[in-house]
Amino acid sequence: MKLCISFSVILLISVCNPANAGSRPVSRKDSPAGFILHSETEPEFIWGLIPNPNYKAPSGRTGRFLDTSSSVGKQDLVKQNNNSDDDLVKENDDGKGSLHKATKYNARYPLTPPSLRFKFGVIADLDKKSLSGGGQEFKAYLKEGFIKVAQNLEKPEESEIDVEWKPESEIQIIKTGFNYGGRGLELSTLNVFNGKIYSCGDKTGIVFELLVNDTSIDVTPVPWAILADGNSSSGKGFKCEWATVKDESLWIGGHGTSGGHKYLKIVSPSGQVEHVDWTQNYAKLAAAVKISSPGYLTNEAAAWSETLKKWVFAPRKISKEAFKEETDERSGSNTVLIADEDFNEIQMIKVGELIPTHGFSSIKFIPGTEDKIMVGIKSVEAENETESYIMAFDLKGNVLLNETLFASDKYEGVEFF
Image (cartoon, rainbow, N blue to C red; front, side, top):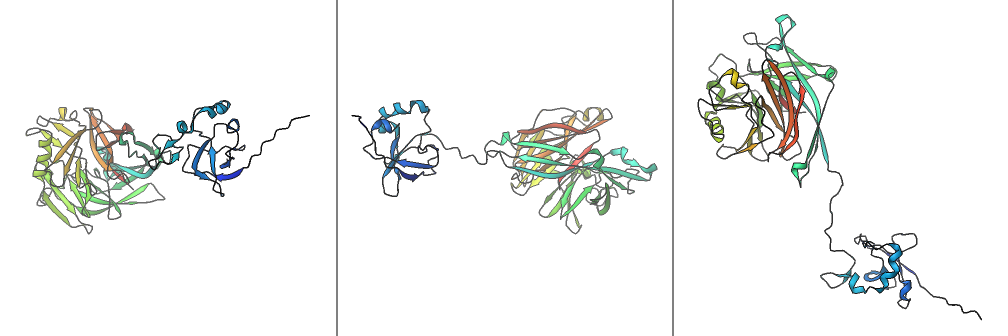
């Protein structure tokens, strides 16, 4: 007589709760469906499955599911039937069993940080080298590229900035005959204002609207406003060095070192100019870095943040001594000053390594970063040689892009298009 033993197993499909990602039901195809077993099924056929009242078949029966977050291998599953349910089931606050492990959920999604990509440009101040065309006209360059930003909000210091320049063959050329005393088109600022692109020459005080031609490398500079030095009673052009947009006006400033350079020009969208004495504000900036006469602070890079309601100044030169040409070219700065609207509270931070011949000539907030990340241009004028570098940093002083050489000419203004 042969003894035949059979086991009757009733299988009922139960759908996993997707919230319990750390556990999945047992099935031959390892599918999302689970199986319900009769309670009288012998332990050795349970293979480490544990009861969970949260999983129910349509009939209302509860199921047994494998905890796949365990490190136990398949060959050891049979051994799990010796463990008690209490050892494997963690109690929720409501007293119900759960298969969740006591680990923090990783909410990172997507796995790669979001990134922004912007077209930007830098404008050249060629000084005496701007003279061209047999002395009849003057030239400047507009160099364009793209900045990619992968901002890390949890760890801002780990944000990533990449710069890609257009080919040298696509550098745009600006030409004009306007000049003052044989100097012209030495452009120091670059701003998008009222939907147009503007740049100011630091020898003529002329603010040009730049008409960019998409089908040509030639840019047409159209005179838009002429800024007189000081309170406007001078016949000399204003030496514009920095510019920013505030209160729907274009604010243009000078070095802030002496005389007419301490005035600010506020230009409306229609081209009306207001002349404001900024002597006290420049004095507060100098005091913040403990500079007093005959020492000086040379300002060429500044920006207003409408989001933060803050001014950011990055002095190009800081010197405790009176101006001397031979020492001035080695007075570069890595200091950034963050001030409230009235310059009553000023915070100082250091950005990157101090290289005496390198100083900021332009800064801009990178769009889409909540005015937390800036791009800066650093210029070098030493021993009759010029160089231009680009870098990026946040307002805590973290360098996100190290100074990177991009031109042997001197570029100053930077702007996003």
